Image (cartoon, rainbow, N blue to C red; front, side, top):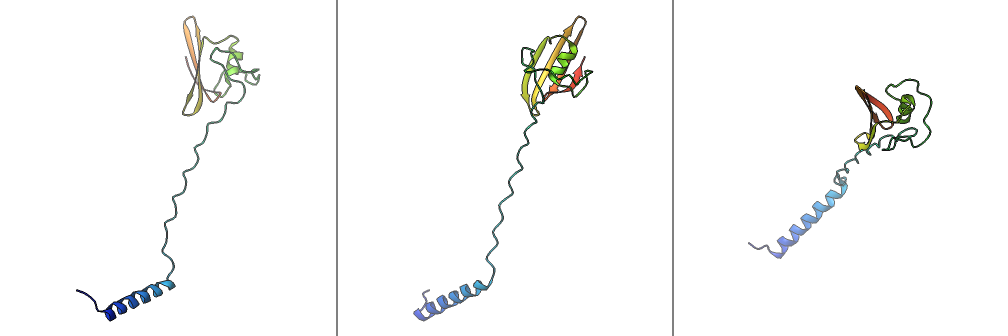
Length: 124
């Protein structure tokens, strides 16, 4: 089915008028980009000196702690125990720097777990 030239012209004019009518309408909405995910929080850096894998401190131990309790620093533990640890394991975990300090004494073993330079828990 073919349109006559006048019918074709009428169809084109109608389409042009429809296009002109759309000029009064607001432009179509464009979806806003999804918000960027929040930045991943980096674990806090250890406060004060830390223990090296050989059990030595990277600096002078603070003298603030008077007892072995959660929250003290790695080197404060060594200072309070007054002897080097039997073994030290240093690693990185989800929370940041994780250190395990072992003191093996006759008849007893004590394991100290540190997270970001602070004593988290003790296993005796």
